[in-house]
Image 1 (cartoon, helix red, strand yellow):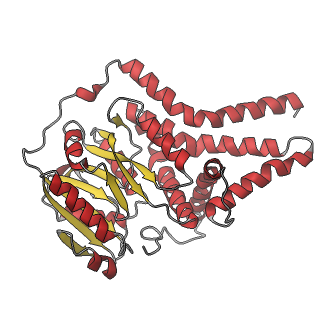
Image 2: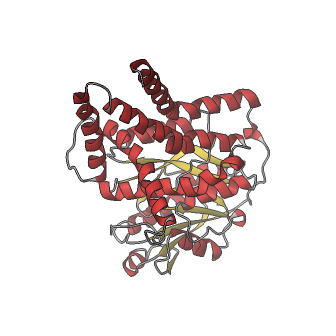
Image 3: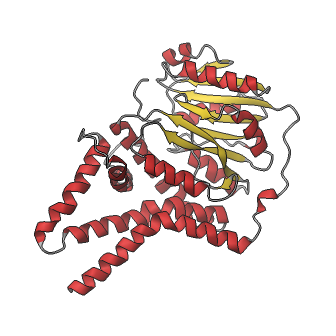
Length: 372
């Protein structure tokens, strides 16, 4: 390849990578122009006058966090003046004992989060179900009232996730920005499992082998023509986990996108919210990440050869730091994390390939966890 041809190839793939964060904004803008006035004000079925709200908390190895979380949930729901229940589905004895302040504690075996969710919803008689995690805090404190207002014309409501003192701060700011480009709530399938709420009667059990239960629920609601939104006002915050645990979490989320969303590309392309999700998430984990690694390879192979370490070493260091192998901290950590996250879909694809080829056992039940 000539030097000019190599330069054009480099520029093309670099542009394809940069398109990743820009594409959802362009698609969202195009959809708004095409549709004119959004259908946000479409009439929806109202909730009962005095709805019963049940918060279900699947919890495993959360004995130090579940108690304060239950206390906050009960306090917020009580202040809102709602009929409510807090139900902890605990997968270990220590967590069950620590959740004594909940309305109900169900001891379940270690069968994974989907099984815990299904068990909790199956035994509920509430009008509204809220799913949340034991290690996160829902904000603001008046979220119950905000949620009921959101459900007046939505079917599945999620929130925005934040992590305190996280190296992924730039990523989460971008996610919130993309989801909040419209006034008020936005229709999106990029939900977070830390906060999901819906009418109990609209729930369908999550398949046990599902890797990302939140994505499955969003796709399922959307496939039935139900409206999935992210609230502009409700968010969750939690302490960051260790680099090794964060890497595992990211790889499992990427596996979920590749196994659950990617095969439904045609279905998603039929709706505005589906097209936005393809641009927002699926593109970045497929074409976008491929463009990043091709660009990196072209830069590393650029003459003179002595320039290769200037590309290879920083990228390798970023990945090693993100995984916890390299234990150093610098002011560039947020940028380094964005670079390292480009390796996550590759790791997920390789893991799926090994599983398909029979070189590994099936996916483990539930997430790999450390005790908190």
